Length: 330
Ligand code: M7G
Image 1: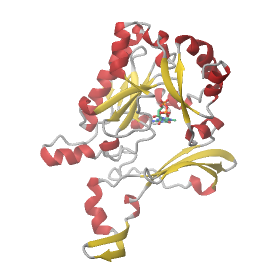
Image 2: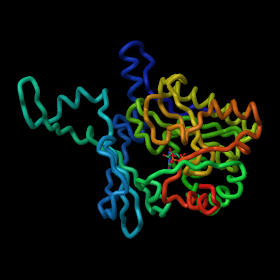
Image 3: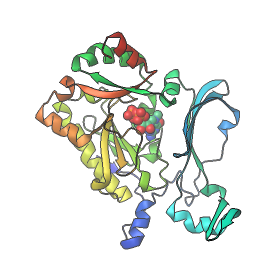
Image 4: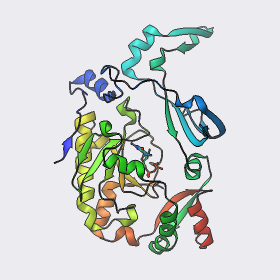
């Protein structure tokens, strides 16, 4: 039967305490310092040499790098994490400040925080394929119009040849990886799914909550494969996913953006749960399809996503864009 795994200690106390608690998603045991169960420090990046900066943003404080690590191609993403409300007292007490300038009532400092309050979320893909490198390279995008026929004659053959490996998805479904991070697991082979924190979320605060629900059914590549026969699965993900997030993070459904990507990067059905107000990458109208709309559309027309024209952005160097051009569709 379905079960909520490793319930979080986000308190349901009232008032200020509640909002403070709700903002702080304490790390899983694996990440939590108080558990005394932290993984060992390691520096697999000591051998990383940068080939190029794929993209970066000073405002978002993120940098995507392509390079080599012990002879393998690698992509590394470095992202400064937000200041956490629950660490403010420690930050003010234990930091060092160096004055940069003072003028009248204004002053500016460089603050050196204790190292554990100044971490950089680091994502490593190694060995990385050319497709990974392209995924992170800053590129101009083009909006593509795909009819049901285009999907079958252009897109489907391309994704059957070219998709990114789904090994990480199968590892999650078979509990071979990230098992301790799972928030909710419904093992039913038809309507079941695994809900867990997305790779992009460091789980330090609920403000940028990002989870994914991965369907247990293995033969649904994307939105395009959905028909009314999948409604029980979609309802199950929608309702149980929201309930699990309320229970674990104290975040109600009215604060959640629940959607599928089209095109996704990984062709195994999964649903994104992000916090409303958090500008998650890929949550724009050109790529995100609200699960509630998907359900309604399938209720109205069982073959909706197999027949309708769908629009989506593709980067300039995406092979699929080339196929649309060759087919005279762009
Ligand atoms: P997508 O819509 O296929 O593509 O979503 P996108 O990456 O362009 O959004 C796949 C989602 O799975 C993304 O939000 C990824 O951050 C997330 N993801 C990818 N990988 C390889 C992992 C992983 O290994 N573990 C977890 N937990 N999430 C992942």
